[in-house]
Image: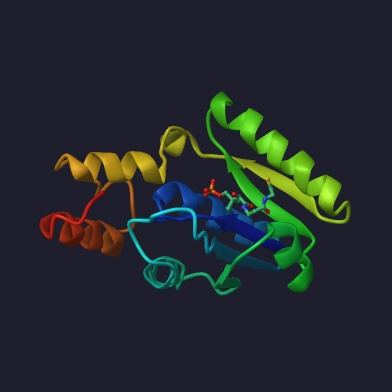
Length: 162
Ligand code: PNS
């Protein structure tokens, strides 16, 4: 089975990477799909995020990194994937994720959402949190892959953090 792991990944965190690595053990192929969302002003461009994810997953043989726009289920159908993979952190994720899974199911009943419980150490980790810590000069080296931490601190040095 082929799984799509969709998200914003602005930036990829160790929590995302944990889900990708575990997804790779369950599925033949995991396609990490970055949403091109014109309504959001991200910290990193789609191209930068794709590159960050590629570098972070180069040790995994069955990962592909791509971007998409529009509905995730349409992209999944186009890629002939059967599964949408999502990580569940704390209880607060549950409502949003359940709603999204149900909505996606009404759009395409052939595609199943599979949730992986986030590993304990990443239960409360999010990209937004990483950006907030970095914006106030905190260290994020324990939360993101090393090259991403460097890019974040470069951004911070240039005073580009939003
Ligand atoms: O990393 P995120 O921001 O939590 O990911 C959310 C994402 C990209 C998976 C979700 O917003 C999405 O699938 N957007 C594409 C539009 C879509 O398919 N909407 C219907 C599901 S509610």
